[in-house]
Length: 163
Image (cartoon, rainbow, N blue to C red; front, side, top):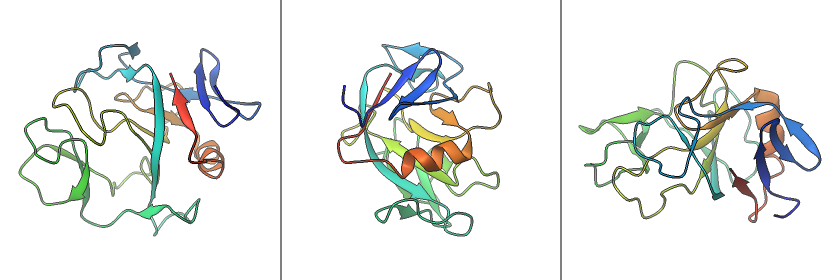
């Protein structure tokens, strides 16, 4: 571990001496992640990028990518673009990144099953805003918006999420 790592502990995420309350997937933590299981995959995950809603938040880092009106993330194992960001419409199952709610106003991408996705191994493991304290995710790690912005502003090319 390095001082730049985000470490998931029973008490929350730890980064730079700070503890950040968070929630994880409704399926708990797993060593055998599968699409749709609601679990957060264990391991060391590089943080691969930052997305943001330009109509709602400022870019937290200069290299953040704005979320466009048609941006989606494929969660369909039969899609050639499985576990990738692309543009809709799409005939395959996917998540819209530009949501009506604020859940994905700021998203930190992990390298879980990316860039060479194994179909069915799980997709879209993000760090994002939580719905409310204690409310589980579909496998992502979620936290309070101010904490998410604080984390995003401290990312380095070496930062990893350790679950």
